[in-house]
Image 1: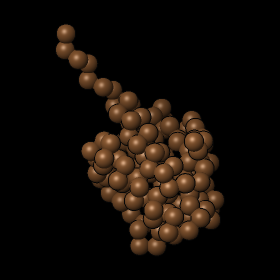
Image 2: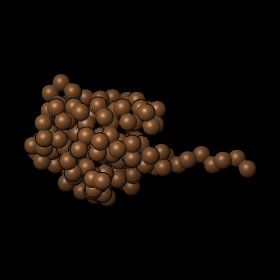
Image 3: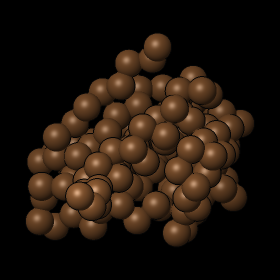
Image 4: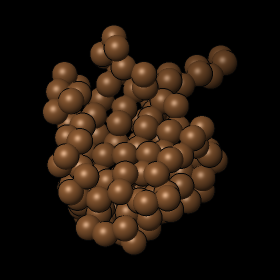
Length: 126
């Protein structure tokens, strides 16, 4: 019997898990996953959001995410932005978009409330 092709949602979940591992490796603050898959207006399946306390930590988190996703999933982002000033780095994997903020920028943009219709999961550090 032929193997069933994985559903896109499960691929997004595996990608999200790799992203979170990269974030947690660099002690990201308050990582959350917003599940956008059930929202009509959403452009992707999920946002993964976290913050760091400095430019250096934000850059380290972003580098760890890129490395972990490449190693575990073999994927490169479609686009990445914000490395110039590292106040808000966005890494776009099409189905999952990563937002890494400096802590003051995260509270200013408040994406969790902007996408309040999405199901939100807070991730605890191990």
